[in-house]
Length: 162
Image 1 (cartoon, one colour):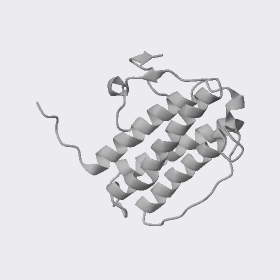
Image 2 (spheres, helix red, strand yellow; image 1 turned 90 degrees about the vertical axis):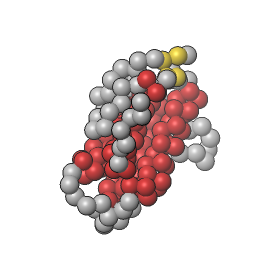
Image 3 (cartoon, helix red, strand yellow; image 1 turned 180 degrees about the vertical axis):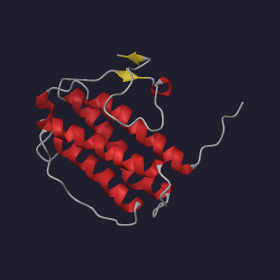
């Protein structure tokens, strides 16, 4: 049986929940030293990447509201930056969940800031491994991800592997 069709706005919200799940896994139990790990002299630190993620979701929200504004934030202390990441996801998701009109298409919001964010979550996962604090792989198809669940408190993995 074919599942029911999902509209683009709902699919975008599910993508935000996926970002929260994968981001939460990548950030969970990261040692404090991870924030300033540098893979090479010219690469961003995890704290800089996380600040960029917050900027991406703030930008996405501004575009959705029709008031496009970009800010290049300096990283906050690590745990504050983690809170900011999830807060920016929540704000964007709350807007998408409401009845307000979108001033940018879900497709454009996905192909710009959201797809970029997924890329950076992957970078953080790779940096965790390089920093000596790897996360376990997971069958993400089996993960308990649902639209609207974009906070730091995410369900435990259902099927991890080494």
